[in-house]
Amino acid sequence: MFASLFVRRVGVARYICFVLAVVLALWLSTLALVSPQLRTLPSFIHSRVPWKEEHYSEVSCSAKNFTTSFSPSSMQLGIAPEVYLISLPWRQDRRQQMEHLQASKQINWTVVDALDPSDIAIGRIFERIVSQRSLQPSEGHQDDLGSVFRWPADINAIAASTAYFGASGSDLWTSVDIQDSRHTTSSSLPYPNVTCATQDHSVPPFKPNLPDWMILTAPKISCWYSHVSAVRKFIDKVNATPEDVAVFLEDDIDMEKDIEIRMRHVWPSLPHGWDMVFLGHCWSNESFYSALPSPRVMSPLYDPLTRSHIHPSYSPRCTHAYALSLSGARRLLQHLRHPPFAYSRALDQAFSWLIESGRLRAFSVVPSVVIQRKVLSSDVFPGSGVGSAWREHLVDGVFGT
Image (cartoon, rainbow, N blue to C red; front, side, top):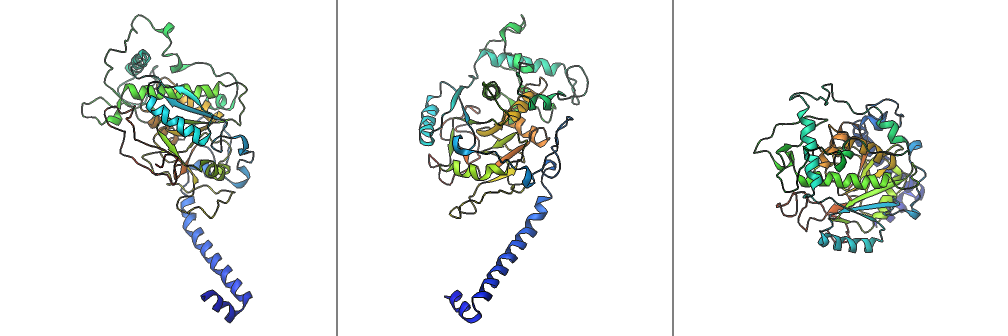
């Protein structure tokens, strides 16, 4: 009513000019608010990837570097031809629920049997961890030769290659043929009181009153091993190409019914050279850095507060849903199997540190499009009910979470 009265008084042309002026004013005010935030983005967004090795290529998130080869027609969840579900074989309660999710979303995933925390391999890994740490001086970041801790110098070169990815480092820790007579650990023996390391290799002393997240346990070792096994399957697949992407899921999840639409909207925002994308996270403000601009416009039917965006990762925890590029998978695995770092903490703590220290080029979807349901007992924190206190909700999840 007001608009029609206004048009009659000032005329159509002036009304159009008035509307354009209002839109321009709103746009300028929004730009003024966003610009200071853009200056806080990680250095690899503005200039170059902060990997510590040499021979990396400088890339930015300018429009010319957006991924343009995205073709969603043959992709699962809108982004990847390969999906891996990590699940303990005896958790049939979880597997039955995941079968419902699989049928609902028509996902053709590969199930990777997780390693049981009581498996004898867990004992062997614990012995190797203790052995590695016994070679370290009590203070400082040192490797087993007494020199300053260093990551392998060829990580980037191997990550960029599609050549055979041979076993190395902690890949060999569970091989029976390399166990000498001292390594006779049985799964029935108690595990040593081992603490979770921080940073590259800082190991705090064990104390009885340490919180659970600082104590290295068999379920945490099992989680690390199981995810490494799944990532290895992706790396070792036949006819792998640099453009390959895989999604890794745990068996306690729910996801948005329209996850494909959301991912097709945000995926073109990713810059070339990305390693990892968190489809869900916990215990972190992943909107700390501003969202990357998207060349695609999401339907106005979506509530602006629940539209999905891609942000540079800040410090994400939890491993229930993430995507890896092939080079990212190869880069990640080289870090995870480096003996002074391997199995040194919970896997999500390792992810978070590698991201914070610039070792991985990671991004997060906000809000999460895959979340932990937390309706069945936790495997990583047995005796704690359904897990940690972190809770999220989807807009319209398959299970209604």
